[in-house]
Length: 290
Image (cartoon, rainbow, N blue to C red; front, side):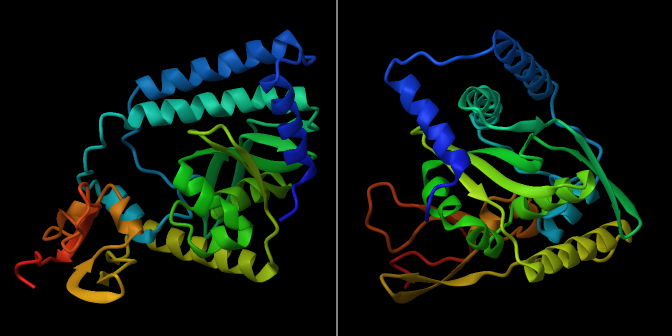
């Protein structure tokens, strides 16, 4: 996959800085980034918003997750380091804002309030940045997500998008009357940067729009709860173990324990690793039981 002009600009600037070369910058860019991070810290320190509402950042998420959230279901407690991951993500966005300006990217806007009406419901949100009059989002990613999720481009992401990133980006673009640009993705472990351009086909846009419309209709009408995913048979080294476990979409959900009250979080039974992976199982047998 060839690199976009934007990605080449970013990499060139980072290469210069990594090798001690001075670059031209406006001190106001640093001041603006500092204010952005102050606002982000205030938001993170103020706690989670309790009132449920549909917004750009969640309209593409699984229906079952949104139904649980609206119903006020009990969320699983996040690990203690979760908030630091969120703050690091905020910091990455602020840093990349400066890097983009230093690199000479044609920044035409950002932090714009987007709004559109779908299925009789008004959806609001705020985008990250606009480059060449297109809407971009900045994302920080784990090494695994950077290599396995974001490396497949738009078409790979749209096939497995439990976080609703594609619907979010298309929503911003629709609400602002602009074209979707894509994502600026930063590996938060290595500092690598990838620009994932949005190049949706019309059929993909239609499919995402239909899914969002269906979600909004069911959320606003308080339709009966629907599980979006079912357990799958577990295989170890190509052979079935007799266990059934939940996929990653359920495992990352804050309502997995509420949705699957009999599920257990256990190490992979057949694994001989010193530190085996843990999964959510709906049917679990140990090695001795099998």
